[in-house]
Length: 126
Image 1 (cartoon, rainbow, N blue to C red):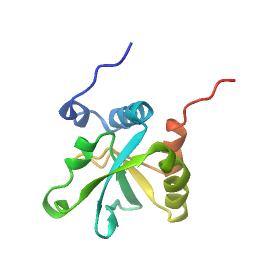
Image 2 (cartoon, helix red, strand yellow):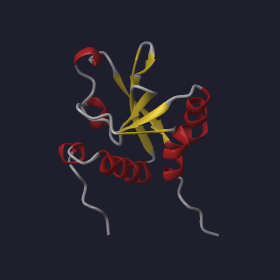
Image 3 (spheres, rainbow, N blue to C red):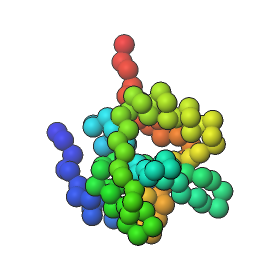
Image 4 (cartoon, rainbow, N blue to C red):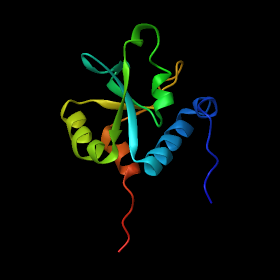
């Protein structure tokens, strides 16, 4: 009935698309996304074209980035409702993208926040 819970190492070793699917599955189950913040706000990653806020499926995954230059960062839990109501519109307004479950050598899938939100919305049946 339930899918096998992956260890962090197993999840981190997946393809970017696999990590994206895993994040969606975890957020639907636990109703929380994770990012990192420091005294200046959320951590930002930059690709050639986009400014991104990284999002992870678990606190452990987010903590794995809090090393070296980012060792002063703390994990930040974002309840799904807050993500949906405040983060998505705010990130859209600021032209920010989401780096979905980045790992040390791979930023992962980079998408607009509304695309991630569409995957997270639980379909309502009437």
